[in-house]
Length: 411
Image 1 (cartoon, rainbow, N blue to C red):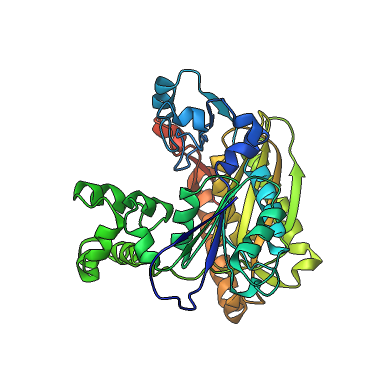
Image 2 (cartoon, rainbow, N blue to C red; image 1 turned 120 degrees about the horizontal axis):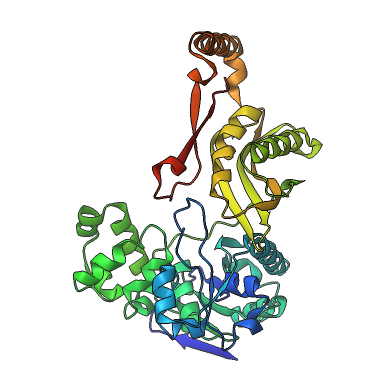
């Protein structure tokens, strides 16, 4: 069914942005399908380790939300509100694979898709009208046929306005907003700002100040919001006025992956050794073509079910084994439970030969040689434990001795 909302305004050649929203995508994948959510109070179990979201539940089903259970709530409070709440192990690997399949289905329609997170994708409609019949309605109908799961689809002049329209419509329905984005957004709640990372912290303060609608923000002066909230205030005013940036399509790069089967109850040095093997294999792949790595993803299949995934963006593009190990090894401490397999993937690449350390190769080698000699002298004088390094283990532990551990320093 197609519903079209029209608002007064000049009919100009505005950039129409489509938004595809799949509600509770991560929970549906982890539970085994959207049919498993019907009538059941489900939530993604909290992750362990020292991550920022430790102890907080993930996405929740509609039945759980009826009891007041929301994403980001503490496990104790969630169980107090809903004693029958069922916890599902998070499976970010399956979520990534399923969402990648959905994105490729959208790209087969000709769309240049931008995706901020699994379950949400945006793209411009301008270049698709000539492919699918010349109207926005026909383009969105083709997009819906390409999807293999129910989704909320909306189009509006701007990505933020399109997302607001998608949240307002129902699954298997399409909403097209024509006219002024500012006029459409004006009566909507400021809680929509939580959909953006930069403006999410402002919502609570705005509500305390009595600013309940986006139209109230648009009436304020941008300089006043900038003085009170900084760049986040400017961004909130731009969104309320419908001045959102166009979506930035993702860069299609085939990731390189290497996996390693772990022995039972592998931990500590065994995990670090497996990580070193994965780094060596990844850097030796001929498909890398000498390119440096800018972003890598470390993931694992857990023994007790589910999976774990952590993305790491390097400060500069590199292809050095030791520097990659230093950046990735501390993330192993975030594993919520023992893993049965470990995987390392190169998600984004830098330029070939982009690491400029060779310009100062001799100085680097001399500095490392002096450091090794100093460590050796210290160990001869004071013993093998004279030079140690701190390796973070359980950052969220209440016991100070468990938060970090000392390991031999390797120069």
